[in-house]
Image (cartoon, rainbow, N blue to C red):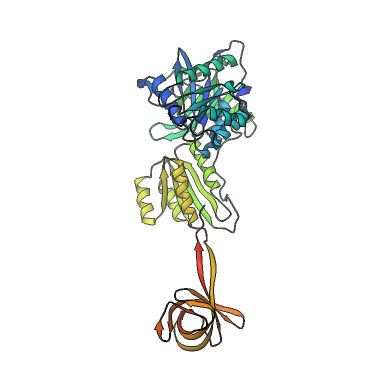
Length: 514
């Protein structure tokens, strides 16, 4: 299998199969609410358990027909995952909020779909809101050369409220009609082919993967050439977590007990024997194992997002599943800037353990990032004792924001000097350690208590000090202006001499954030 769904060969005895639908759109435009409505109303409550998260997949029924939905994360960091979702889908739904209109991720979704030539439906959501304006959304789409049917184009458009359910059944009917027009089919006499949607390590069942069958039938016990490894479907379940003997095209399949952790986007196909599966893998060109153009792996050791001469913020990344790992690696590295580089020291799947803490202890300026994972109790204690910072969460925005703040702490601040005046040293009164008491006269501007002074001798700077105390006529003051004389205590290591010039200035410190 080449990794392109268009290359799957359909045999003469092909039959219609359920459409595979991906839902895309800008964050907070109601994509999750839409999917949740279908889960609650189109999947029986007793069967709802076991539906996967992340790029999960599940089936709904409408008027005796099935539709498989692929869920894709909405945050901008998951661009690659959304692109991969579009490559395995027959139809897409682009969700646009009726009160907000087209946003950056809306445009990104449209670009992905137009590039992959996947047919799509526009779902204008949140029409229950008072500020909803469906016509404005259609106009914004038209400005992007996306013409819906009511504007003379060929793109179906359905106004819905995923909150109240208005238009939701109509949307399913449009999807089924599009599927019928496309003639989507599969061959049930073939062995299964498909793609890995997600994979993770389960503490009870070992490595578990969610597969999407694109053609043929997958049976319990089948031998799979999966990415670069050979696996057996020992434990086979449907999307509801129920045991299955076989699953057909368009069905999500959960398989537990793999030996190797596959990558999200890896393709698979079934062979009669392990020998044939291994021969198939050996014959495949490098990079053809995944739909995304290659397998996903952690960055090479020593990879730095930036120049070698700037401060480097080190990260140890642990996530729950492969898809999250890939997306967060990309998002974290993008945080690097011209002032700070981001280096991912280690990236892996699973909970944060003692090995991660020990690596952090041995590394300068490091933060451990955990996405939807736990910290082992012993690791947590060691981290507290060693003052190792751990960023944890289940919301990518919050994780990236906290990492951005921590990385910003190591960026050298911009220090600007604000000149205040110049003074000439007339007499040296006393020197005790680094503190020196001298007398002088202001020749330009003013001298102030608590600011900095640079000592100039024979037109060359010899040192920098702080004005600790200031007097005029033996009376403490905060400021002395030209042309008055003064007595001053300066803290500075280098000894001051008569006739030295004092340049008086303040420093304005600006912290740089990412």
